[in-house]
Each structure stands twice: as C-alpha cells, then as structure tokens.
Length: 613
Ligand SMILES: Nc1ncnc2c1ncn2[C@@H]1O[C@H](COP(=O)(O)OP(=O)(O)OP(=O)(O)O)[C@@H](O)[C@H]1O
Ligand SMILES: [Mg+2]
Image (cartoon, protein in one colour):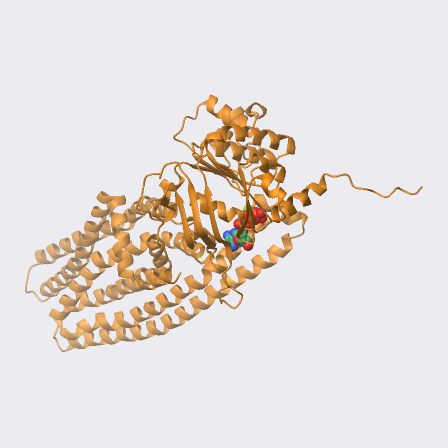
C-alpha cells in the first residue's frame, strides 16, 4: 500500500502528459496532426492580423495627410480583410476538430482502463483503497483528453501568439511587454491555487461518492430492491444516501468557494494592470513615441491579448487545474502494480503443494481512519492436492474455505508460504498461465444477463460451442434447455425482454459454465447450496464420474456429499485441523466428527412427549 501512495505523489502533470500523449496520437494520427498544424496557423493569423491593422490605420493617416494615394489604403484594407477571414476559418476548424478527435480518443482511454483491470492482481478488488483508485481513474479518464488537448493548444496556439505579441509590443515600446506579465501572473496564481484545492477535493470525495453510489444500488438495484423493501430498509438507505450526497455537495461547495474567491481577487489585480497598460499606451501616443496605426492596433490587441490570456488561464489552465487530481489518478491507475509472472505457459497438470501458506485480506479502516488489525483468513496451511484427487473442504462459516481454494487456484498469492502447481510457484506464473486449465464455480457465482448459451460458453469461448457439447455439460449440471422457451437462445434477463430463473436454476447454469471450461483442476465452492437434495445427489454422482481423471476441490456444508471425495480437509479459524478419508475422520474425536454429528441430529427422529388430550 505504501508503494502505491509513493507512486501517487511522484506522478507530475508533465509526466501525466508524457504518458497520455502517445495514446492520443495513436488513436487518430492523421486528424491529430491536422489539428496541430491548424492550431499553429491559427496562432500566426492572429499576429499577422494585428500587423495588418497597424498598416491599414497608418495608410489611412497617410492618405488623410496627403502623403500617399487612397489606393494604398484600399490595399491595406484588402490584406486586413483576407487575414480576418483566414482567422475566422481557422477558428471554426479549431472549434470543430477537437470534438471529432475526442470521440475516438475517449474510446482508447476507456479500453486502457479495461486492459489494466484485466492485468491487476484479483486481490486488489478486496482492498477498498484500491477500489477507490479504480473509481477515481474512471473519473479521470473523462478529463484526460481535454487535459492533453489544452496543453497542446497552449503549446501550438497560445505560446506562439504571446511570443509574437511580446516581440511586437517590445519593438514599439519595451515597457509595453510588461502587459503580458502583469495580466498573466495574478491569473496564473489563482489557477495554481485552484489546482491544489480540486486535487484535494478529488481525494476526499472519492470514498463518499463510492458510498452514495452503493446506497443508490441498495435502493434501486434489481438484486437488492426486494429485500430492501420487504425489510423496510428503503428509508434507512435513503437517509444514508441523502447524508452522503449532502456531504459530497458540501465538499464541492467549499472547494469551489475557496478557489473562486481567490480567483476574484487576482482578477481585480490583473484588471488594474490592464488599465495601467492602456494609460501607458495613451501616454506614448501623446508623446508621439508610437504611430496612430500602432496605437490603434495595440489598443485593439491589448483587449484581445487580455481576452486570450483569460481564455488560456481561466478556461484551459483552469479546467486542467480542476481536473489535475483526477487525471493524476487515471495515470496512477495505469501505473498500478500488475500481477506479473515470468512464466506465460501453464505449468502442466500435476500435484498442487501448499507449504505453510498464510493469507490475510487488506485491512479496512476504523471510523477514526486508523487501520484495523490484520487478521489471518488462512493460517499456516500445508497440504498436497495430488494429481487426479478429489478433495472436499469443510468447516464452519468464516473458517477460511473460500480463501483457501482461491489460493489453490492461484487467484490470490499467499502472504507467507508457497503454493506450487506442478512444481512452479504461483508467484512466478502469469495470470493466463494460472487460469489456463482451471475451472471454478464460485460461492457467489454470476448471473450474466445474456442468453443461456452465452451464460455457459463464456467460460471458454474458444472451445467447441456446438449443441452436443452444450447438451453434455447441461446434462451434468441438471440444466434442461428444453424447458427454456427458446432453448439455448433464451435470454436470461428481465431487463432485456427475457426470463428470470430461480436461485437453484441459476446455480445449475453456473455449474454448467464451470463444467464447460476445459480444465485439469476444477474448484466448486458450495455449488449446490440452492439446489434440492435430489438433484444435488445426481449432480455429484455425475461430477464424480467426469472428474475421475481430473483434480477437484469441493467446498460444501452438506457433509453427506463429501463421501465422494478421496480425502476431506477440515478448516477451523483459518487453520487446517484435520485431513483424511470420511471413515478415518469419523473414527476420531475432532472437528469433523462434531460437525457430522451435529448435522446427523437433524435427520434423526425426535422423541416428542405425548400430547395430553
Ligand atoms: N473480501 C474480504 N475482505 C476481508 N475479509 C474477508 C474477505 N472475505 C473473507 N474475509 C474474512 O476471511 C475469513 C475467511 O473467510 P472465507 O470466506 O474464506 O470463509 P468460508 O470458510 O468460505 O466461510 P463460508 O462458509 O461462510 O463461505 C473470514 O473471517 C472473513 O471475515
Ligand atoms: Mg465460503
């Protein structure tokens, strides 16, 4: 965690620009180049127009004084007209093109987030601080394009324009160059403060935003609303939602007020500077230090210079400053440590050996912001899952079963100890190599709002998706496609004009998905919790048949079904307390016997006292 924070502070805006620019160029190389060229031409046309204006006024004064003929004044007017039209055309292009470039670039920036997410360590999603970073990155992506665009506009349009105007004003009267500095400094200072304020806002508001988005889901999310309504939780969540929304608005209001007040006072300073420059110009004209044409051109240009300066600082730099925090978050996210491994190829099917494996989830934070004490979810477990063996894992709620199987699968890396797949440490395996020949049905399986066929083949889209293969896995999982109105093409979503399934039916689809994936190792985490006992027995019997030549790990609370396993591992408080066959374990005093007997009680006849008439 410390490492991540260090990266966060290190990323400068220049660094962010350097990383984002290549992405933009690659998105639309041609349009991007045209846009830049037009921007430079636009800048030049502004400067040339100022010179043409001076020429026109000077020739008009000369005509009035009888020094030249009217033809020169018309010629100067024609040049002024041409540069003016060129300015307008280039201005139109400068307003239109960025919109086109933005569409294409935004898609690339979004893809970069998705690609990154795919390469992150899955354990990252258990860490609230890192979830915040992902949320912030989504926000930053939207500002990233305009940030790079604004920097480029400053480099290709504003800076050449200011250099030209600086040279022009200097050539007329050196002191006039101070106009640029006097107008620029206070406004730039205001934007610097703005950047700091909004960067801080971004950091403080991300957790609140995540909170209120979650409450929104609790109230209106399809999976939540039934329970929320029936248990009367709606008003409870609405209250929390309102509170977090108000908190967010207060944070935003405070930040906006602070930066606006400072900006207002700085604007007053630069307006005073602007008036001062106008007075100096008037004084220079009276003393005949500048011509009437130069006076008129500069008088006009100073107004424009002030406008352009305001535009660059308030609009462009202001937007950049306001979004600096979120852009930095976007870049930081792209820089986040990835799950890397030197071996890209799957290690091959063999024993999976755990040696003194311990794992703890990232610690949460207490109300006062201090971290919660770290607690082991799995502690010092040593175990060998032999090639082709079926292992059942049992234990009370929270004893570490699901965490252990994620470690066996290689989804999580152990904090201490090693997990070796066919001799290779999971830390050294790339994600694809780890998941290559592994399938799973998780405790919290997903209900994809897609067709029945898609819900199954999603686990192995490259495999044979023909109907006979689908029939085979559906048969094993107890799913009967004939019972669905449109067979495999039935849409499993009410939102997309399809049907919804019962909990048990959904679970069978999830099992079919797990079986569909080609695998050497399959992990089933309470796969039949919502399935009736009759169907459960059938599924397990079929599973025992097909997994005879595979490695398998089954987590279950129903001890009746563990008998199909070769060995049983008993977990308690994160530790592996017993390991053996059902017969071995039941013959000993211990956790397994205690659990087994507790369940057995449910199925024994109860001696009820006779009812007294
Ligand atoms: N995402 C998480 N973040 C923090 N702690 C977690 C997380 N998931 C699980 N834990 C903690 O890790 C411990 C083991 O949880 P695990 O889910 O592995 O238990 P389990 O044996 O599978 O329980 P169950 O039978 O209820 O599914 C528990 O104390 C739990 O509170
Ligand atoms: Mg579990």
